[in-house]
Amino acid sequence: MSIDARIAELGITLPEAAAAVANYVPFVRSGNLLHIAGQLSNDASGGLKGTVGEDVSLEQAVAGARLCGINLLAQMKAALDGDLSRVVRVVKLGGFVQAGPDFIDIPKVVNGCSDLMVDVFGDAGRHARSAVGVYRLPLGFAVEVDAIVEVK
Image 1 (cartoon, one colour):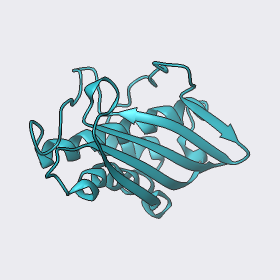
Image 2 (cartoon, rainbow, N blue to C red; image 1 turned 135 degrees about the vertical axis):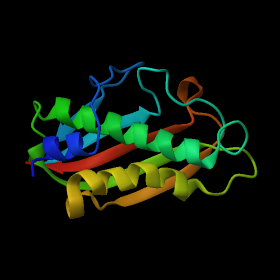
Image 3 (cartoon, one colour; image 1 turned 45 degrees about the vertical axis):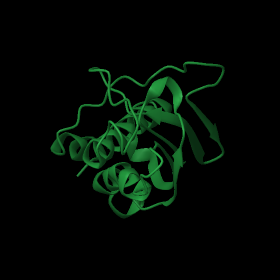
Image 4 (cartoon, helix red, strand yellow; image 1 turned 90 degrees about the vertical axis):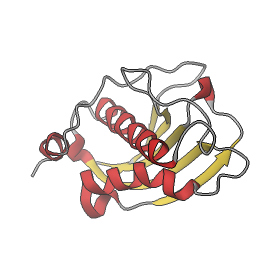
């Protein structure tokens, strides 16, 4: 099954890749590695903003991390001229969660993105990862995830 067919089977419609909101580019390819800038938990409806463990639940945050993953897929597609079959491996994800002082389930939140990568790419979606709780994220979003992807 093609990657695009798998994404459709999962009920996902990829958005247009988001433009940079500051002085950076959304992705950089160096050799066979594609570095994708942090993607926020946003979508056409506005996405998920707030602080996890305070005004955002664990379940909402997991869904927000999945949104980050969908946005990462959109950036991959843009970087690869629309051909996601060129993804060899998701090498590493870096997950950031805007967490309240007592919230410790950061890894569970970032699983929302990790699980999506495995669902889409199978074993090639298994990756190394960081999951970090932070005080604030850009524009008040609850979750941000960046990625390093091996491509051909």
